Length: 73
Image (cartoon, rainbow, N blue to C red; front, top):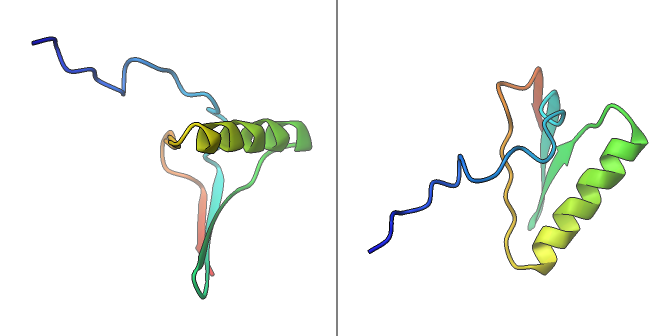
């Protein structure tokens, strides 16, 4: 049998600057996870990356460190 893969080491962080502010909103059956980018270009890049991952059937989110702001609504 082969060695089990360690997903923590086989890929780097694709969006290392997303981790400063996150918000979770609950509205009925909808749950929204919101990341606040430092600019529109970074936000667009993250959105496209998430959409691409969802189209492939899996999404991987890892935040580096503790965010400076986490808000529940």
